[in-house]
Length: 284
Image (cartoon, rainbow, N blue to C red):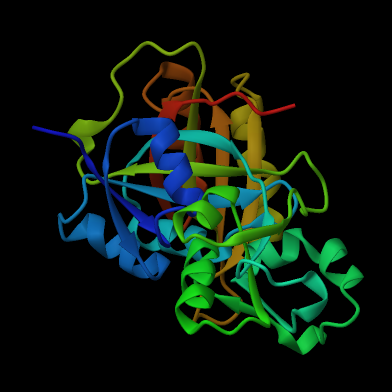
């Protein structure tokens, strides 16, 4: 690869995905995508070398759409990182907070700031409106020029669009972190370093999820592999069928990991390895 990598992000420059890409890659060429499906398409079609995909937040929970796309398309996971998320209320310069009547942001950001938003009693709850991106909300408010509108986004988005920060760190808890997965367009881009700790992610479809899950977990327990995540998701369009994501500490190609996955595959209707990658430290 010559020159900086092209990294697909969901949202506009200044969003948290862009900050995560900067933290991971340093110099990169960002490819903004208005939706997660278009982000995955950018990888599949070769328009991006990598993608930065948020998968869960310490306050707002899992990003369901990303997990659904991961389960269906399974691009290889290159790595993970935890980004501290700071949310600010951003408006046009000179506008007092009491003049605001509408707030826009990504649904995850709105969920993470509910306690603060409820304090703004002069804003109708129906006027707190989710849009496709945090920084994109600032860009939209700026372009529309309506002084009664504001957005919630990272502090850098205010500077990027020459807007005013009315309140900082309005998330419900200062310990607000989003976990991102770094997805690679090609398996040959996967890490070859001897990291101190590794994590593996696998997607399963079980015939009877409730009855099959304990045996799946025992496959890892018998080999001393710590399971760090178990998440169940409905299989869209298939009545009463679910898929399961399981993450464990270890490499899928080590003897213990390979044996566990072979046994798990025999229990499952479908089994798909999403990746083995260096584990990022969980923030305090």
